[in-house]
Length: 204
Image 1 (spheres, rainbow, N blue to C red):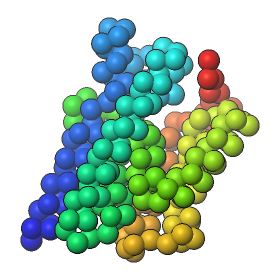
Image 2: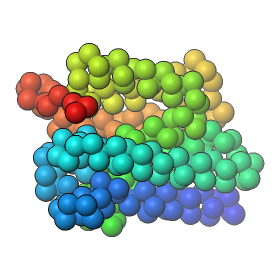
Image 3: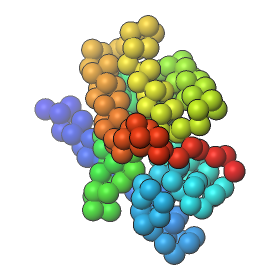
Image 4: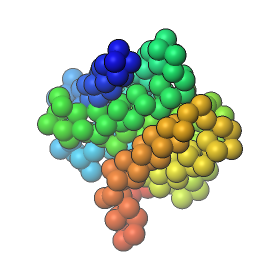
């Protein structure tokens, strides 16, 4: 019973903490605006980069750092409970993604969760994280669609778990659910990719 209560508490904490969105906070503090009223309306790194430029890298660092802190805490908790570290990282990573996508603090209007997912992927298996990063860079530097790059990088992760192994059968299940959530959050991008109206990413 203690395990159930602690796992439920970990899920709730991950959802609540991950709901604190750096893009929304920084747009209000630095520019006295709400990033959700600008560009595509998505409070994430890519839209922040298009609207405000290089300060978007602060959002990048904070989002990844937030994900690492949450997933590491969850993984360590699971280890203390006698459960696999990898399962804890994937479990809290999924709820952290939910919190980022549907934050209670911002009327459930959040980002797409990829940078939070990155943290979970690297904590689950750094080799899979490196391969996913390679997929992302390869797609981004060729076609320059960040949305397509993130979806393909995420989609590569569940199959790679069967290559490198997993500590619990629930790990690939949760990982697949996380990928489906990320793809669902990109539904508007998929529509724009289909119609040829998706904007390309610029590092400038």
